[in-house]
Length: 142
Image (cartoon, rainbow, N blue to C red; front, side, top):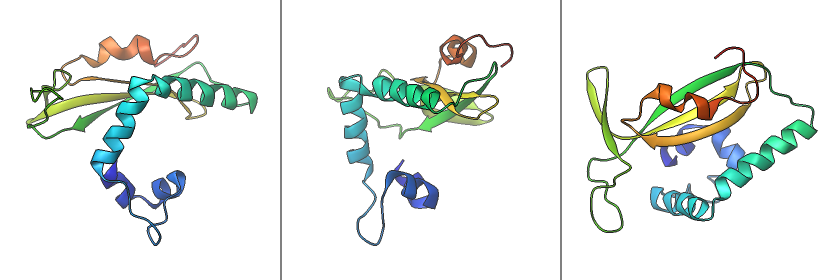
């Protein structure tokens, strides 16, 4: 996320950071914030609120979902609090390249292009296994 913020003016504007006045939060700060959201299950609540707001604004989901899967790269030395290899991180092969990481899944409405679902898993979880978690409503195509 830190790299993405430095690379994208649109992301900087979205999160409200002006590089002339403040730096981008470093990776550690972003991870602590993510863990805080996870610990209190706030990510799911925020996502649900955004969906409710979108529906009130007349943005309705169609009958199709676009599924995007992104590898979240992590250094091979990633450790958890007990200084052991993080059990959520696993190896996966993409092309001829091996990664030690997780996967990020996004479900996007086929018509409006609004994100309606998201999930993260270990890298070794098959993409097809996550499909039911990414569908929204009565889909007729993926």
